[in-house]
Every structure is written in structure tokens, then in C-alpha cells.
Length: 550
Image (spheres, rainbow, N blue to C red):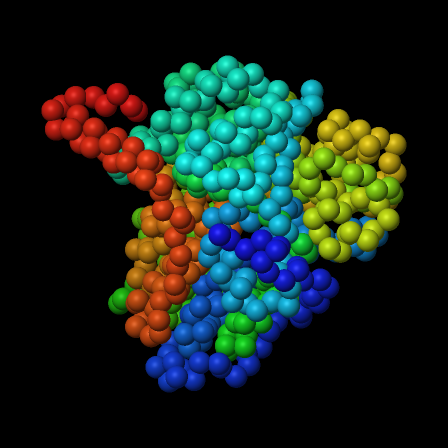
């Protein structure tokens, strides 16, 4: 069982932000240093993938330099300030039950206090009111997968009729079929999640009130714009494979301060450099070997041009950032597999935070909103940070974090118009906010910031091992990762960072590979069903018959 608040120290409070550029300290791995001397690795991008790769490689004795474009390295978790001077972090990021590698990392960081809440409940809302709620499954008797989820949610409130919920049953059969072979997976990838729901006979109410909002906040796009294969592997990881999988906890402070800063301190303590305000502008490749020998960058503050020698390069940036670099870098543009990345898309996101002048108790600390932005086709969430995060518990008022996904049609709105929308949505769910005075707020816009797993996108996603011999990719959007964490996932991003570090170790021949824990194995009845489907497909193919499934 994963750690809960009763098993670990209380979350950390008041961890100070560090300076931007961390200079190398004496190495903590002298045994490996001699073997790794002269082996330089450049990691481009911070966040879970970049920091994960850099941390392991520095601990193995490599000369690691992590280049991050933001002034305070921390990927998407870099802080901003409100008009009143309050520092905020963009959005809220959950930590689900199967985030086993991240939970292990947090233990290994030896933090003064555990940085996460206990598992929490969640509410699902539409403009008419509550649709349903998600319990804490790990505090309930464990039953076989699917049976447990049904039994423990059956007595809860549902605005959906039992008949509508039962229309989702045929759809569940696809979870044991979609990855029975690579060919089958790619067939599912070519169709949209909406097409699959329609094929399986899911009712309009089940689709509009439950499945669509779930995907809008889980994969940040409506089902008609999402690959059915990615939808299935994401829901299987987060909710279907085991009863406990949907349990989620939240950071009790900013991820940048409570997790990424300690990670950076570990990197620098092992001899690495983490440098902010560095924009990568180009790569130099060896004409004989095709390897990247130098990474070129500029200092965003001074304009100084910089060159970093490299025996290996790990890219841990998003789709949009890599596409910009691809267009400006002949060494990347010459690679057929990397050019396909230009076919990929990204999604617009808006993050907001509101400070109210009064304490308002909410039924759930985490909330999913459906149908509140029908014209924009955007999903939304809101979180009561006064319940979740230490720094806000003693505030005289209530602090709400609310995010919009697939937010393209909302980006042109003024900050005041966005804030008014948030207030309206929150008040419909929690009338106690009506009449509360807003004392501070912030709106953050992130165009093309999040991976869009659109139908047919799988062939264009890169493998971690690229056609450039010493260039490796990391991030939740890469493919070919032999691990159960899928979709838009902090766990997947972190695991790809460890996997990229292992590819560097494998190529350069120095150090040990990072241990990567997989998710909990399939339960026996699920494994049996998967095997039966696989055998049925093989038999049908042998006799030239079509499969009864997709």
C-alpha cells in the first residue's frame, strides 16, 4: 500500500526558494567519477522528466548540465506573482495511487515533511448540480477490479440513471482488447474516443455528463479530438485496472518548492549544474558519427551565446518547444523520425487563482466541472486550496484554484472576464461563495502547452531512442515506454526521465541504471480476459476471419 498521512511525516511547510543558477558542489560519487570523467551530458528542460534524468546521471558521476528556459528551473511549476504580490504556481497536479516511482523519489529525497495530502474525495458537477462523487477507494474493502469500483460507487449519489450507467458496460470490454497487439493498438489510435463510445452504445447522458468531462480534465480535450487508444490506456492506468487506482492526493505546497527544489539540490550536491534563463538555439553534430557534440544556447538576460560540450543529450521539453527547435536546427531537421513531431498538436490551458474575503466550506476539495463552457467546449476544475495547502489554511478567507482545458476559445477573454466565469461556475456548485468579495486574483494563459493525443497521432510521436545515436527523448508524450503509466501523467514523465538516463548509461557505459518500478500487475481475472482476447484474435487471423471486436 502506498503512503498515507498516517504512515509518513506531515507535509513540508515554508521551504524557501533557491537562487536561479546552482553551481556544482563536490561530487558524492567519487568511485564513479574517475570512470565518468570527461563524459558530459546536457539535459534540455526541467520538470519531472528533466530533473529525473539529471538527478540519476549526476549520481552516476556524469558531468551534467541542465538547461531550462525559465528563470527559476521547474518546468511548468515555475512561480508567478499576483497584483498583490502573492507567489503562485500554475494549476493543481494530482498524485494518483499508482505513482509508485514518484512516491519512492519523495522518500529518497529525505524531505523534512511529507509534501502530499492524504487521499481525497472529488466531486463531479454540471450546471444543474452534483453528478456524482469519487470516494477514497483504498479506505474501503478491496474487491476485484471493476467489481470494486461498481460496488463502492453504487450507493453514492448519481444524477445519471442506473440504465445510463449500464450502457457503459460494453465499452469496458475494449480495455482487454485495445493493446492485445501493436496492430490492434494502432487501429484504436486511428479512431476517436467519441467514435468508440458511439460504437459501444454509450448513452448520450453517460457521455455528456460523465465520460466527456472526465476526458476533458484527464486528457485536456473532448472525446472527438482524442485517440481512442490513448483514452483507453489512460483510463486503465488511472481508474480501471485496480479498485484503488483512482485514489488521488495533492501537493500541500508548490511542487517547485517542496519537490523540485530538493531534487535540484540533490543534482548540484552530486556535481551537476542546473541553469535557468538558457534558451537552446542549435545543435552541432559530428559529420562522421552523426552524434551531437555541442549544444548551443543563449542567456536570455544578457544575450550571451554559450556552447555546452555533450557526449549525450536528453530532451525533456514539450511538443511546442521541440517543434520550434526542430525548425531552427538542421541537425534535428535531418532526422526523419524527429521531423514527424511537426505533425503533433498541443492544447491551450488557462490557470487561475482567486482569493475570497471569507471562509467558505466546500463539499469536496477537488471538483470536476462538466458543461459549464459548452460553446468553448472546454473542461474545468476547481480546488479549495484552503483545505489542501498549508500556506492557505490560516488565511482569513478562501483560496480557489481553477483551470480551463482545451481553452482556445477562452484565451482572448480579458482577465476580468475569465475571473467572472470562474466565480459563476464555483457559485453554481457552492452557493456559499455568492456575495463573497474578491481580494486578489491571477489569470495565467498557456497556449499550446500540453500534449494533444489526437486520433492517428501515435505514428508521429517519438521513441526515446532516436535516429541520432546520442540524443534521447523524455516526456509523457514519447512512445514505446514499457511501463504501465500512461496519458498526461507526472509519473509517466518522471519514468521517461529515468528511462532516458538509462539509455545514456547504456550508450556511454558508465554507472548503473536507475531502478524503475512498474505499476501493480493486472489482477488474475483481467489477465485471463486479456489472454483470451489475444488468443481469439490470433485464431481469427489464422483462419482469415474478422475479429468480433474492433
